[in-house]
Length: 548
Image: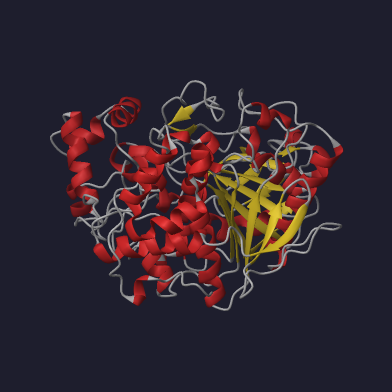
């Protein structure tokens, strides 16, 4: 595989470099600063017809130079909720969506590779969003890859007939399999773009981080990435393929129920349905896309895998945002109207843990306490548990807490909201376009650009050699015994023992749920929680521990 400048007369010569991959030649688009973008690269065959709900099939080679200057269609999804700050409708959508995009730095050679998995609750999202434009990160010296993967019912439906036709007796993880296939494509082809296939960092936010966490537990992804950056990830309890566990129906039962709701008698009828109608009707029916513990892609619950130390042995950055739930208020139930009612509900839910809960989340500001409790139980517990798990393996692990706020956020009471780090991480401060319409934009000021430079430097240096550094910014220490973290505010600053007591409280709650086996911990957080089981968990369920 070689990279050369396009020559006069070459197909695609007018749009920049030509790169020759194992699948065929691609022509890219030159961008400012010497970066070249290669957009809409197919990494798998179209998942249509009989390939709907099948593992992805590697793309067949093509003969001529393929233009790679425009983004491909996003995966099929429903429209965003009106009024959402995240609403940004894809220009095009299709069931034929297995494409990726590459930004190549100038004169790249053996460069670190960063593969981005977008968020969107496994229901939505589009790598073509301007929030994920990779050229600024590429100018930091990394080859950037963003990936489309199947979403919603097309990516996460399990069904007994799908299991029966699978040679692996598996179903339900097609979106994860797409991500794995994209990583295989990177291993085989990224050297043609100047990247080092032996130095791949998998990074993602929200559902993208969840996917990366799940891939850390998948034997199929072993060796395909070498570091991870997990932004607002969450350690969920997943439905299991053929049995009910933790209060969840089996994944196959969920799929059978959806098929009945859709009036589809069998798999043939499901595959014959119009794709857009299928997606829309499955959302209307309440289908919640989640990966499946199937014994092949995911052999065990992800928390159990981390407790056993069987996850990918790779350096890690994990963190979350101070105001996560301010833009995700659907996680909160109706709030009590008085301190007395609040305390009574807490005691009814948390029992012997109520005093610890009220010490962390007091009644004098019910809204702020509810926001903080949901944040800590969902994102904070997950980030610190991941840092502890990698530290126990003797690997570098770095924890962050993103607290930066600015006037447009404050005007909407959305300080440091979920995903608000993205414009800083992708160098989008001051970008004139590509924003979701209602996104509260950071001011285009020197200090905002400086913070963005620091975040990009931390992440790309970590991708380069496993140690996050930024010139002129605070040193970021590994988590280790002193529970070090980096607070990323207007200026990054180091700290120790983030949010004392929060991790221990939520670890105990989830340990009890795991021991009881009757409650899941995906959205059962804060005041939305059912009554917590009494203490009865054996020690092996407390994998997070009080000490890394």
